[in-house]
Structure formats: C-alpha cells, structure tokens
Image (cartoon, rainbow, N blue to C red):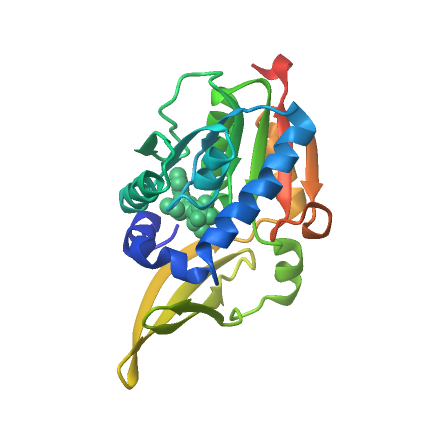
Length: 260
Ligand SMILES: C[S@@+](CC[C@H](N)C(=O)[O-])C[C@H]1O[C@@H](n2cnc3c(N)ncnc32)[C@H](O)[C@@H]1O
C-alpha cells in the first residue's frame, strides 16, 4: 500500500533519532515516569515484565528499565535496535533487544505483564489485516489480565483539519541547532498520509538537509478502540495528555481471559 519502506526509514534515521527531542535524556526520564504511573494504576506497584515492541532507539525501554522494570525490547529496524542496545550499555542497565516485526513477535505466549507500543508506531501499519495481526500477537504474548499500552498522535483532531506540515522542533547539539519538521501529503481516502521528514543540520555557513519518507494511517480513537476490542481486549481506556501528563493520547486495555 505504501511505496516507502518503514524499515529503511528508521534504519536511516536511527543515528539522528535523538535529535527530534529537545533533550532526549529528559524525555526518557519523563516518559518512563508517566508510563510507569499508568502501569501501576492497573497492575499495582511491580516491578513488571514489560515488552516494548517498537522500541526504536530505546526512548521508553531505557527509562522503564532504569525504573526497575524487567524490560525486553524489539523493533522492526535492526539499526534502531542496535542503537538501543548501545544506549542501554552506556546507561548501566540491561535489556534484551531483538529486531522483530510486531506482527510476528518472537516471544512465547503469556510471557509479559505489559506490552507497550509507543510514539505512533502502530499507525505505520496501513491495513486492517496488519493491525489485527499485530494486536493479536500483542495479546498472545500478554498474560491473562496483562496490560496493553499504545500511544499515538491525537489523530481525531488531525483528521478534521488535515494539516500539511508540523511546526519546526529545535534540538541543541554541540555543532549547533538542528531543525526537524515534517510535510504531510494526504491520500485520497482522507485517512492515510505520506510524510516527508526533514532534518536541517548546520554545516559551516549553510545547512545539510536530510529528507526521509514514510506513510502513516491517521487512526481515530473510535477506529483503534474497535480494532483493540476485536483483538480480545477489554477495559479499554483513553488517557488524554491533560489527564496523564504524556505528550500523546495513551490507550490502555487488558487481555480478556475468556478470549484466549
Ligand atoms: C516513531 S518511532 C518510535 C520509536 C520509540 N518508541 C521511541 O519513542 O523512540 C516508531 C517505531 O516503530 C517501529 N515500527 C514500525 N513498524 C513496525 C513493525 N511492524 N514492527 C515493529 N516495529 C515497528 C519503527 O521501526 C520505529 O522504531
């Protein structure tokens, strides 16, 4: 459905991925704090066995492991997974990390207390069939009553306004300010868009421009809620940024024992 390879996009972005944050380490700490709070709310104090099935370079997995959880991580991009492993090693914690597609998770059934799929990873799946496959796999590796956590852009608003660009984000680096922004090209279905990801890196008196392309399905809350329920989850709750302190809406849901 998309002419762009998601794996190539993240393989190429892995070395620069931290530059989309103003301060990556601060984001690691803050995101872990908020996500741990949501886990505690549903499953108690823990520590818990958590699978981050779209870990990227480790933004959530590292903070959760540093917070005492037993974390396992995987990602479609082997280059991002390798960088996550290197970042883990420099922070004095331990996380087994694998390159794996969330539609075919290479883990035994009923292994985890929590499966996390954070920061708009799930909307890279562009068909109902792929979404179902991923969610059924997440359910399979969760224990009875285990917790699913998905975070994604607030697409309900986006689908109304169909923006064509994101505001520039600035990251301070030792070699100057790096600017990141995106251009969005909407498909005729009004639900999916091709994204051009621009990074402007200062270089002497000019800029080095890096452009990478991928496609997203702008899933609304009712759409994702229906897919999650179909996959056998119950107790489906949306946590808004205002209520959770997370920068994106967070869906939590629990594995319905009767659906196994
Ligand atoms: C926006 S990044 C977020 C990464 C990480 N959670 C973070 O916040 O830094 C989306 C991630 O989803 C991963 N991804 C996309 N499709 C995937 C799939 N089918 N299976 C596993 N990971 C996938 C990408 O490789 C990428 O690392």
